[in-house]
Image 1 (tube, one colour):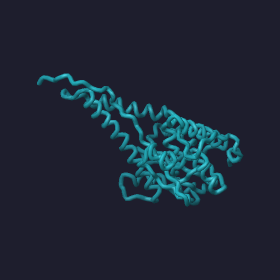
Image 2: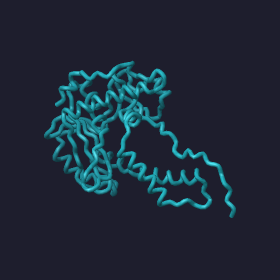
Image 3: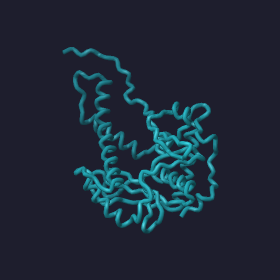
Image 4: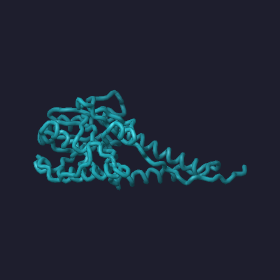
Length: 279
């Protein structure tokens, strides 16, 4: 067989333009609009999610290293076939790497769903829920809300938090569950966790007049085991919220010549009294 040289674009990775959007109805109902883009958001005055803002504005070194490692392993473990040019080979290998990412996301979603439904019939996921359940019974007095949609009209951001609970020791908390591969018994609590949680706590305060604390709960996605928890201090929560406000402002200002300001042009207010009144 004689192989002909085929020109390739050398543009193997496409830009990720995905985003999570929410619409706030006149009666205050919050509707997910994950099918929208910035053009639609401008037309309908949709709010971006904390995840979208974080992804666009702040680098995540831990996530970047994981992605690079998965791509490198995919190339090492999948040699080029004789008939493949650069574009075809790169597309195949990136698909392999993406499948591992998608598998991790699917398992994480399934574990989240089991916690939300307080059980599962999936024999693969059931051991993870059973390992989680004792922690829940020891720590959670009541669940105030699960998969709670929240919005802050003063900055134009909305999203969905995993759970609002009354903790037996720490009182009212916003909880966020994260699934990850835990190594050597040490969970990774990323810097983005408290920034996003602080938004939900602030949005809850604006609606109900009560400010929750914030806690991250990490679940090992590979080995069923007791969750790893981190309660953020008053100072950490206040600092995280100030960072979040900066990120939102930068995100809004970066969207085109005049930016995109769903709540109107605003400046971060670091002097809000409730920030310093954190429990």
